[in-house]
Structures are given as structure tokens and as C-alpha cells.
Length: 122
Image 1 (cartoon, one colour):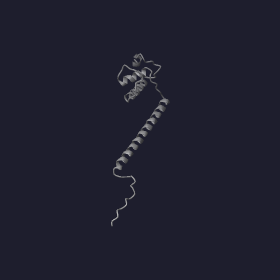
Image 2 (cartoon, helix red, strand yellow):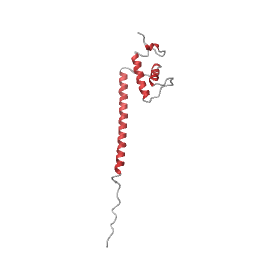
Image 3 (cartoon, one colour):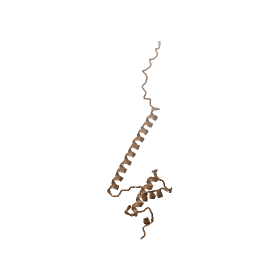
Image 4 (cartoon, rainbow, N blue to C red):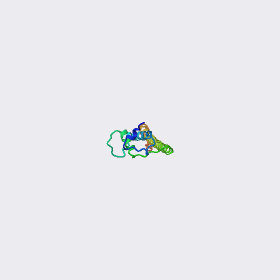
């Protein structure tokens, strides 16, 4: 069986344990590129998937396997959850300020001057 990766000039069999690892690494990198990440260098390609494959095969990316990969995924998930929590709290504070502003139209919380002296009638 002919290995398609061996046809690529940038491919070295000691860097990747299987062609599936190359595909997974490139697909994750392409996902990040589509979400707005900047390419690691200049590329002659324009599609994110091709840029990602070029970066992976060129050795510009580092990837982890096994326990290290699972640990890195957990840390990334915790970081995303923390960012989401901060965003939710900020939105809640903004919502509370907006509600208070809208209610201030209907309720006057200002301290009223002491009662005006009533005019005396003779």
C-alpha cells in the first residue's frame, strides 16, 4: 500500500506516528485559523485548511499525545469556562445598570428638600 504522506517532500516518518495524527493536528489548526488565529508565517496558500496542513508538515506546530494531550485539553476547557463566566458576570452587571437606568425614569430616589412651609392664610 502506498502511503500518500511519503509523497510529500516535507514529510518525515519520524515526526508523526500515523497519517491520522497529521490529519487531526491539521484539522484542529484549521479550526483555530477559521476562528481568527493568525498564520505562523507567510504562506502562498489562502485556504485555512491548506495553511494548517502546511504548518503541521513544516514542523511549525507542536502537538501532544497521551496524558499530556488530555491534561492540555482540560486546562484549555477550564480557561474557556473562566472566560465565559467573566463574560456572563459582565453582561449581568450591564443588564442591572440598564434596568436601574430605566427604572429611574419611574422612581425618583433623590432626597427631597424639606417640606416647603405652607403659606398662611389669614
